[in-house]
Image: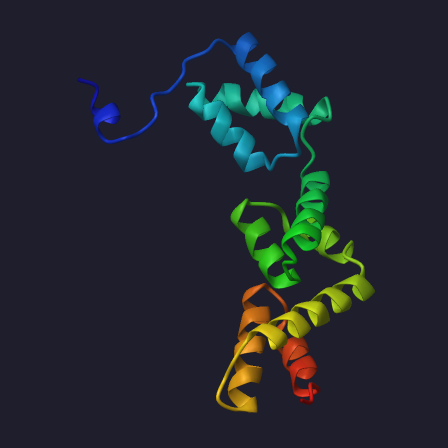
Length: 165
């Protein structure tokens, strides 16, 4: 029996370069992708490093792959849908091996007014739902929740200190 199969790994699908080109073009056209995601997918096709680099270069020239566009789409989506803060978005983009330039461009694209309003909304909603023995414990719970969502601690504490029961 195949050893990699026993360990629970997926068996690599070996494809030729033309088939890989078609598949990866569809993969990138479906949604924005990070370069690292695309490379991982190409390696899963059983391609060699040279072939992977050739296909990544082709995807970039054909505008299927654009790191800056991916970072902007990723940060906008995570902010609007999951209500993540800048810190968490930055961290996740770094995990996807996105360049600092693209990360900064994406983070700067988040509207400051919307960011403040979203953070204040999270604070208000958590304040209503949380229970605690005293005001300090309640503020701490609320602040920790919002900080874990990726908002800057100093900004969160400034807002939670101003809440009066």
